Length: 163
Image (cartoon, rainbow, N blue to C red; front, side):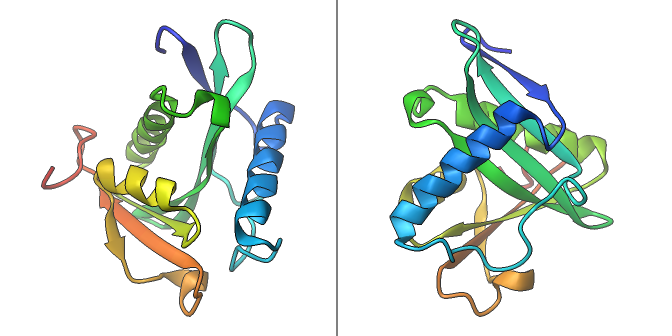
């Protein structure tokens, strides 16, 4: 917890989390000019292993979210990382990312991957700043002209290897 927010694990169908994911979808539809900007299977309650929501302590508003979907025995994909525009630049995105990394380590997943897009330079800068390395597209993102993929290898201390 920080002075301004708390991050809680919630079920995928949590109403506050669903509202955040809908706001993310609207923002991405506007950035890409279409609603066809995510290759592959959309995440669901059936395949999300961990979902977190950040809540502003001053007014109780949900201000961010993120999820993990297991890829194999040692890795997971970060899905639906989103911070409301009103909370961007406050550190909540980094706190959400660290919460997801800690949850991955608890499950024995030492590699985290993610996909963001060509119309999201802010997201790409964020992940690079946080130690994620650009990789070739993986899984359903192979061949996508919109996808930019990243990976971070975690170690038991919660820090990335080589960082």
